[in-house]
Image 1 (cartoon, one colour):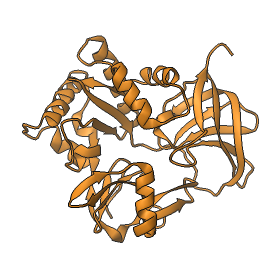
Image 2: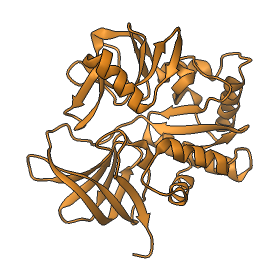
Image 3: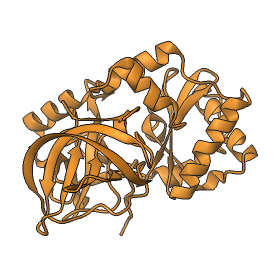
Image 4: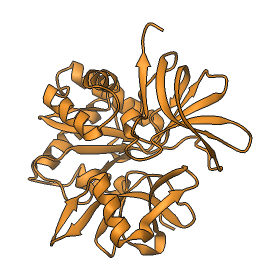
Length: 311
């Protein structure tokens, strides 16, 4: 059976293209979120509210509550998949394919810089609009890594290449646009401070690119009971899985053992030893273990993680 990885895309016969959220399947379904729909003779990129509204009105069979992730999202039965776009497979092609496309030119130039830093391009996937052939002159480049050590090496490479002035940091306008798209609970200054130290995004020839990790660590598949909203001040004691999906931060709180984050805004948000202020939904498993969920809905309204200094 075909393997589905986070950051792949799948398409259904109705002209819907979904981004895969999680490796593997759940009850013969691929866990996804709708990104594009073929409407009025062209492909349209959808906002989260528009995607949910379209499915609710016309395709409710793709709305799903994941018991694995304890979250409302979308899912597609394997038998309903018309086409599978593999980020891993296409990455090996697109880094080498002759092209006159300016987006692809920047992608390949970025690939050569990574090679100079010792990265292996055959292990890097390509997702987003490029994967499904819908890029335009303003498109970003979205790269995927499948091993944690390779992802961390890429972040180090980005930091070094920025130091060498071969890559650029985002401009004030870029950060503002990113902040508006995220719609997070932090203010602009807080958002930029946290993002700048992650080294998972930068500019090549003025074009933004992002790095993400497809590998998924020790997230639990058991059932959880929701206990309600909580704000918490705590210390991070382990950040090994902080860039995974979901991102997991082990914390020092005597009752809540982990913060589990399902929104990319707060991926990699804090490091071991740092104190964080966070807010989200508390869940408890059958053994009485509690966790704090950030991103219980895709919009994650009122939910956040931020580092607190001078505690």
